[in-house]
Image 1: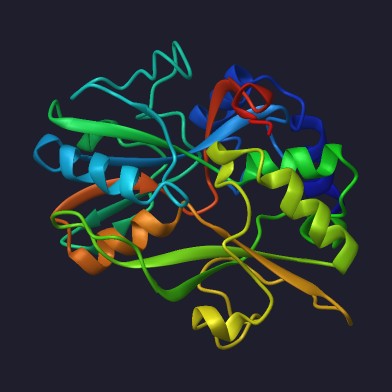
Image 2: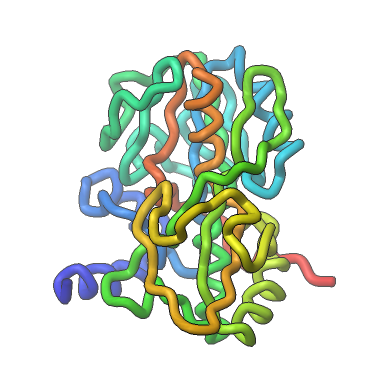
Length: 273
């Protein structure tokens, strides 16, 4: 654990370009929460061109889980707006490949399956809001309990708004705070719509159809403490649930919590009242 913490801390302040290089070289092949401080990390969804327009409209109708940062032209692997000189085929720690809605692999690059008709969507990520919370001194339990890790995520019984072939449940991340810190976390994250904005729910997990906070759909839970207040944010894993439920014939995403590092600063996406 000490070795992992040391590596994490030494990489936390690398530039996005340096971090992308480490992803390309296989050095970073694990969740990226806590890396790239001050810059937006992005969820990745890659689809055939014939599905891209419907997915764009799906994102626009579901902006909480799917805030659009950039859409690449068909066949173009370079995010020229958010990460010039990057290659979306190699610069994600791990990918997830779907065929007919089923997961068929989590490769370290997608060069061999890249096609000229593929359209890449880069969507905002809550890791950028975590950066803002840490900067404001709000305790983040997944960083306090040993090895840094991403917040646990849960499939809910809340349906997103369907568009074309895309339909499915909202996924949320949960972060536990003491009540005063929960108020601050709500206020701060509401200023960052590209990081999913403020919470979509506070309190009882059953209201979202979550039966047990210690049994998340994705990743590992944190410990729960007396008087905890539970906050739930829309999560960029939502499209992966939608791809699976909708049995999309072919799609590529990032593996959950293994994000793409952009050059876009977190502060540039902040909104104020």
